[in-house]
Length: 108
Image 1 (cartoon, rainbow, N blue to C red):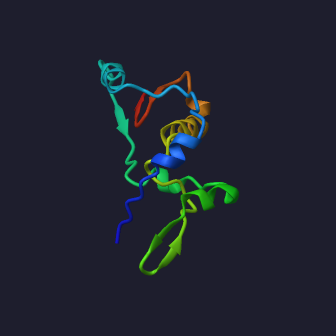
Image 2 (cartoon, one colour):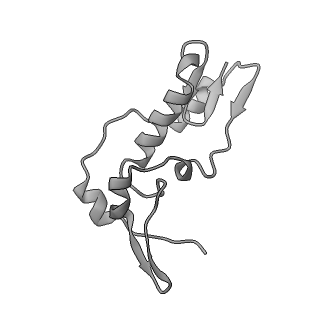
């Protein structure tokens, strides 16, 4: 079963986090002339980032089976993209300079 929750009201109440996100044209252009290009499988990427316990209640939703909330970041939150990009830069931070990191593409 897959839940689809509309977070429009929550997103309006959250301040926008300004964090630079990559543009697909920059990602593609940055791979020109590379010997090796690595693409990460980020199918479940947002769902691997844990939310603070105090923020989990804001993601709650009701189903016929009960009330639930996300403990990891769901897709659709206003700042999910910025949080994910920040996490990837944290993970690959020591490699910045020896390779370019744009979203899901890494150029060495």
